[in-house]
Image 1 (cartoon, helix red, strand yellow):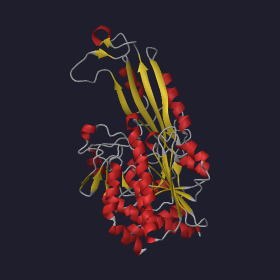
Image 2 (image 1 turned 30 degrees about the vertical axis):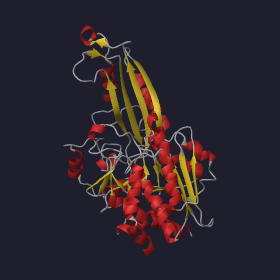
Image 3 (image 1 turned 180 degrees about the horizontal axis):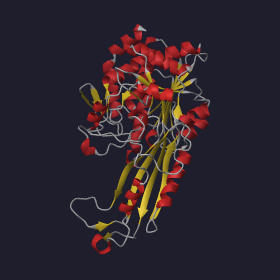
Image 4 (image 1 turned 30 degrees about the horizontal axis):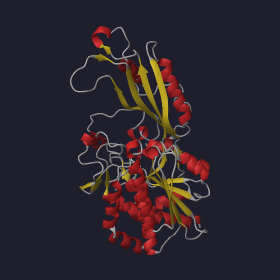
Length: 456
């Protein structure tokens, strides 16, 4: 395997320059004004995959943003690894909180700062460079396919249709995803699951127009006040979610699993210092790691209404709105939870307002068995490159397409992420450690090698 390391060491500068070029493209899937950027980014991904050694690279249009597919088939008798990732990124707002331009990558203290650096351009691009490593050293262990989409950050609305229509094209032995984090470089870990997602929007309307708060205040319902009361009612004094039936289908973690999770290093003081907070908050009876991994949550992601401009305007607003997401754990259904949450807000609304509650998107939770060949190959790869056996942990985020992949393609998924929870995903000043980037490129080929050996 010395040829892998030698090639990667000699081409570090090239690997970084290519990633920087990719990060400069504002591929924001949520905004229509970035449609041309999305197309340009898909073309760049296609070009890089071809240069890395893929024999076939195709851009497939969808009703939204395009999908990039590539493959390198060396021997039909060898196992095939399907790499999934996404080239779209979250909006960069609020821009004023960035230390540098979100699409003007800056390297500082060994980290590359840019939107998409860790989620997910920097991580899926490690696989492109692993493909190049195999190609340039003539050392392929497996067949490799790539499915790189442009709509993950908006719930992958068109990927399901593509997967269902292209089962033969995507036929593989395992799906490999790098869109997750590890505990640290000193304590490597592998996510054995991700949570599901239910995302809704609320709009509360009272009067048919904005009103003078002195003339009408106290006589007409204030939508902001009503919305705040409704949201506050979703948690009790123990921060337990109060929506009827919310926990009905939750599969509680076993004492043995909670014991394993407790072995993961966690410095509460450093955690609070990094976030600039004095106290932690969450469901009573669970640790921080448990709250972000094995328990479902309900969070307000945005809230607005009334006058928010400079100076004062004494207005009683006509409308108030909020975006709310629920993270789900195994056995919870996004469809079921979405209905429960929507019904709850309708049921508690006072007579003086109209509630419009709508669904945005959702996804199901997913777990990877740690006794599977797929997981064992990943664990051995990490141990080979880090010198430590990885800790199995549950990730708090969501990758909505996972459950559909298993249902439609009959494949298990392995999460081989190299980001850190402190990488500011979805926040200003997103970053990715260069050490993690290069370590990922080093580790991924070993997964292919060990997976092929174990399958054989």
